[in-house]
Length: 348
Ligand code: H2U
Ligand code: ZN
Image (cartoon, rainbow, N blue to C red):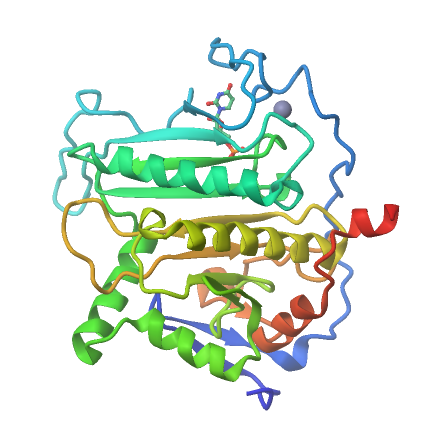
């Protein structure tokens, strides 16, 4: 596979889309935009942060003096609940449909200065349990058909606040990205009578060159079709459809691998590594999805340093996504990094 030295296209099994890979372009000089490095040292409590314990939010409500996790309904939700949504009236080619949903924010920790790689495994496990409870609670609402858990990390990803948090958007419709993936997984399951991600993972574990992290319960690979330079795919090793289907040991395994992966990411450019990550789980419309396999995507924008990010512009916007560094090279770089956090290593 490392024989990929010249331009080629790779097929994304999950989205059924192509990505252009140009390995020969990897060494081109960069004189373009440099992103500002966000301040590395933050205080444990910020009186101006709307997510810190005891502080007031923009909406006027006051946060409790929470001691571990804190979950609240988004004060500026992108979606409104039942009875607050008018019917859309599509006309000829102007197609629209009403959408309703629930938007929540989950603070990972009362500490303003921490992020996932700083949290210990028991705390990460509590977060995973809370994701599981949120999914099940929202799935219980009859008109909610999909639950999207995601974390936007870093100003570069449009995150509005450095306080460690994620969001949960539960919707009546299945959004575009999971919908594409479901279609691909369903067709593979129909044709092969097997789960596509089970088969894909088996192949990746045999080839090893794109594997970044592995424990008994989860694997992280730079997917063969990765678009973002250091994009990864976190896949459950057992065929399960939701976080709530994981055993206690597997949830501990998820905590372990989240910690290790995010430490590698921070160590890569010695910065608090920005990304958008999120889990794809079974839709909550009551149907069976034997083809669905629990996974998470990490989409980080950084390309070659803490300040140089990948731009999705030009050909990528008008043609198709393109990358220079191959998935194999990106995986090798992530794999070579120490799993000891760089700041701890420096202070030791
Ligand atoms: P980010 O994950 O992109 O930073 O978004 C944080 C969310 O927090 C955002 O959706 C919400 C915003 O609407 N928020 C509140 O609900 N209350 C506030 O007081 C500020 C921000
Ligand atoms: Zn805060």
